[in-house]
Image 1 (cartoon, helix red, strand yellow):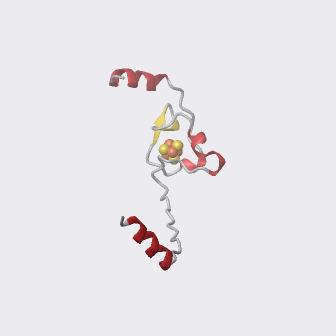
Image 2 (image 1 turned 180 degrees about the vertical axis):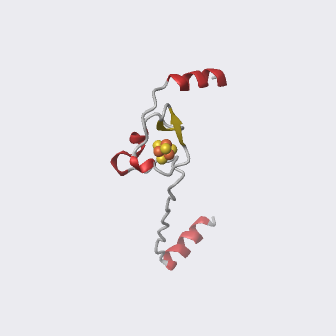
Image 3 (image 1 turned 90 degrees about the horizontal axis):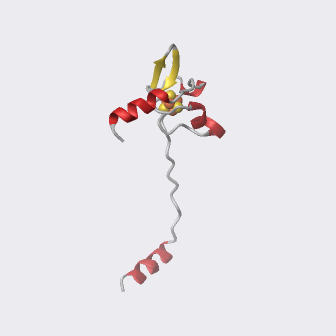
Length: 84
Ligand code: SF4
């Protein structure tokens, strides 16, 4: 799709106002006096059911790494089995 077609399509899409969770995001733009999302047409959808918007710039996502306990005896047997 060409850039002109995409820009024309963006103009025709009705953008809904942002929700409270969006406050502080850098993707917020002003459109006819209302704050809308520059990325998504319906911001509320991206915050439904406790979700966190994937494109939010104001939220740091925490990744928790769970270390799995490894039995050293089983690990050595597993490693020995792979050497074939
Ligand atoms: S990118 Fe996500 S958090 Fe930012 S304004 Fe749009 S919907 Fe809201």
